[in-house]
Image 1 (cartoon, one colour):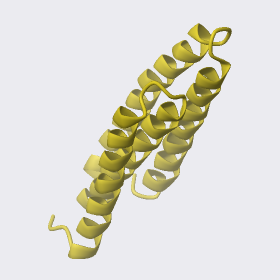
Image 2: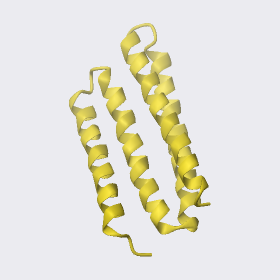
Image 3: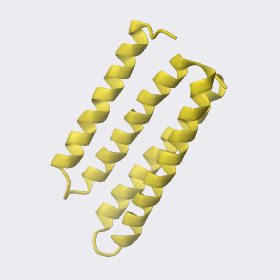
Image 4: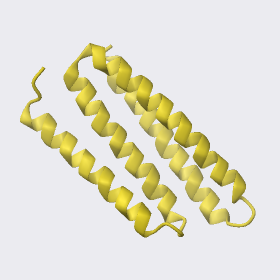
Length: 119
């Protein structure tokens, strides 16, 4: 199925935002704000996947939703583990990790509601 230029432009913008937040994560790594940047990078990466899945049709939407839920779960557990590990020594880092978990939950819920109309 061909992708029209509007959806390709939207997916490219989301991918550029994802890469920008990934670079910001690497630059800001020792600081707590880096966790928020990594969560935002994953969120925009999932958005790019959703744009392509919606364009591809029904057969790709369910697969994209499963991939997003699985990746969100894995990264969410990792962020929760970091929050637990640093809860005493670095509470701001722990809070930033929990914010990243909230971003991943937002991405998962959004992917469910967006692909529900397709599937």
